[in-house]
Length: 406
Image 1 (tube, rainbow, N blue to C red):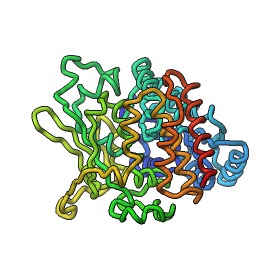
Image 2: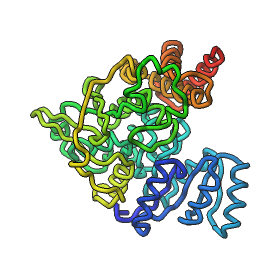
Image 3: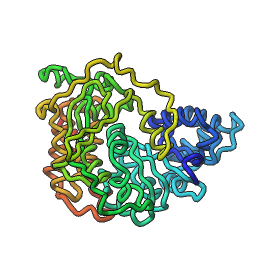
Image 4: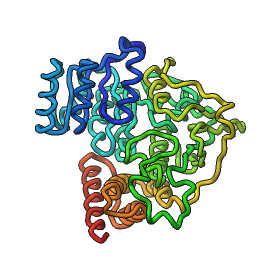
């Protein structure tokens, strides 16, 4: 298998990352035949994708959804086989026919198939940051043992990936490629993740208590799913990205900075010991990092127009305000605490965001409840999946109990 031809499984095909991935596949379908697609409950959309790309398999969560999809595929005369359940996700991620897996299932549900793909030695394009947040040590261990390849899709981490030398990246993300360990550090001093500031970066703090889910889902720069857009507004996404960067690049908390960059043109930067700053610039469009990872180590067209620097105009930066974004510090705290601390804040935030989107709690309660969960739940060593899933469920149950007070 070479980067010129990869049989793809897309986990989360009906989400925003899945849609962007398939938009790129449409540009050169002969290079990226689709082996399998998974979706949640958007049955009509998944059926249309099966009709267009003719994957061998389509996976949905349960029997009811599977029956609906089978009926639609019969109507479309599509021969895609329908599978259901969590085990089926693992099967389509590890099948010997699969070269590359796009891991784009949002939240904890994407953990098991992503881990299985790495254990199987696959090339994994990671859009699900929770996989590293919840089980970073286990994921990185799987990469080493199976000589798998992990390529980051988050725009910030992909920007860092593009700005770091190969000898720095290879030992952690594609260990099958041998480099001289004496050259591996490469003079890297720190990385700087950029943050747009989210939907409410200029909203007066006095108005935060009245923020609605509808308003929170309108990002000024990016088109994303509801959950990640809310995370951007609270800056919890950046807290989780700090943890993800720690695992991806082997850096400690003191070597990872975050700066507000409202234009979302510079996607992140790497600082070197000689005083140099290398940055990756581009339009705020997820097709760019996806195309980079799909084609790596080559380059390919993404369908995104080139960045016009004259039109972009001024690029500005400012420090992150901890009062406006109380959720942000939880990422650094979780790194310092270690163990299952990151699992707690991830699960608690995921449940709190769902409650906010359902109008059960106010926007300001998301960070408040997540912190309460971190303070209340004992931290354990994240040494196995039973512990990780157990803490995940415990944090969700804690938030559900707290929600009753609202």
